[in-house]
Amino acid sequence: MSLRTLTAALAVICPALALADDTVTILHINDLHSRIEPISKYNGTCSADDDAEGKCFGGAARLVTAINDARASTNYPVLLLDGGDQFQGSLFYTYYKGQAAAEIMNTIGFDVMAVGNHEFDDGPEVLRDFVKAVKFPLVMANADVAAESPIADLIAPTAIVEAGGQRYGVIGLTPQNNAELASPGPTITFTDPAAAVAREIETLKAAGVERIIVLSHSGLNVDKRIAAEVPGIDIIVGGHSHTLLSNAIEGAAESYPVMVENSGGTTPIVQAGSYGKYLGKIDITFNDAGDVTDLAGDTGVIDASVAKDSAMDARVNELAKPLEEIRSREIGTSAVAIDGSRETCRAEECTMGVLVADAMLDRVKDQGITIAIQNGGGLRASIDEGTVTMGEVLTVLPFQNTLATFQLTGADVIAALENGVSQIEDGAGRFPQVAGLRYTIDKSVAPGEGRIVNVEVKDGDGWAPIDEGATYGVVTNDYMRQGGDGYAVFAEKGTNAYDFGPSLEDVVAEYIGQNSPVDPQLQGRVTYKQ
Figure 1 (cartoon, rainbow, N blue to C red):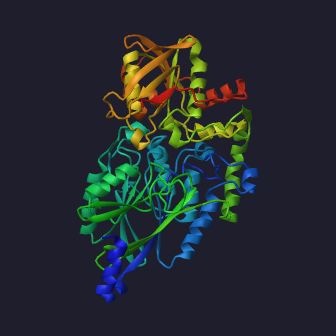
Figure 2: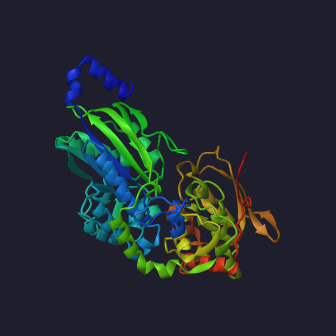
Figure 3: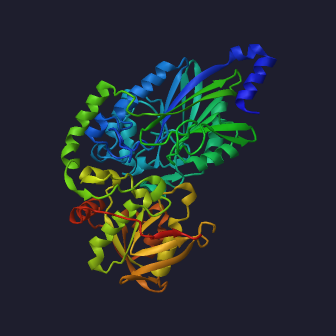
């Protein structure tokens, strides 16, 4: 029986029960990724002209209005939650690290935030400074933090927040594979999220807290597993997979909320896309026993129909002034729109992957390097046709990676590609965009058991099968070379490694300048077995 059917049945059987119900409104965002200014349809910074023409989305000034309007439109108490990954993605993070985000979130008035993997991109020290700057708690239950860690005693597993006279226990989750995704350092060990949730539910209920929210930066698939395995969760508010859940928005991945059955009933999961383009809003009704009896809500688009809050708009413009000289510099032109979307670059060959891998290989081709491998998750935006600025390149490549070169056997190149295609179903960022080689995936094969069925390397004007016993020169970024995104084979088997080449964003910017107008096209570097 659905929650709505259950509510109607209970009201007929016992009308007085309905009078004891109470409702809370949860507003939520996730994966903002430093998109403090309005974004284009490609998720990059929107030009002033396009913004004036109503072509842009999101931005802190519109987010303020959207949240204030949502607060004003409900008759219920409100909780405002962030599913993690405020860090990384624009010059606002590159320049201010987490301090601009902290100021804006404090102004808006968030109640709780989960710790995303990108909150560890510059080590736990930057996260520590952010935690100290915000006026609300961050939560992270599935991590063991050593006493010597910079964030020791700063982030609790849970937060108990009050709304409308009721107490809500909010359990935080961060990706279990953070050590592969970011730079948390050796003083933090990440653990199974389902076990952490089960443990914290017991702790909260022992403290008399019956209303349980899981604020999870784990991705929709992991959230579904948690919901199925752990009863007693009233709702999971998610992030990490950038999944748009909606009943009305075209192209949404699934309905809002996703309902998952477990031994205790059903658990709803919500998530609101990414980059501040959407705001999720759900009303949850509880009875006296703390059980959910009804749900109603959806995700809304924050587009040009949402007016900018004037005070926040002025503050964003002020914060942007030091960034203008950097990002306004024109570096070249593109003959086409270059696709750097998450949906494409983490599942198949994308034109941004072609451009970046070609630029990497071009830079070091005189060093005996013949293969380039770039993780699709390192490509964070698209670029539209026309003039290309340094700001756009930095939005695509915000991580300040350097080129890393090394030697690797053909067999280990294949092993690296196996890792890269091992989590296609999850949209993982390890997916390999390449130059100098091409490969075929058999998705019917289990991960790690031979999904890579054909690999060829460039041989003059043609292609030749890769020689597993031969040694090849490879270029990647320093994050991957040191084992990031599961590429342990690079760290363990690579020889003659040099991780301190030029910055990746400068390499790509120079390549665009030297080859303008650039015109990257799909070339069959990544194919699927039919």
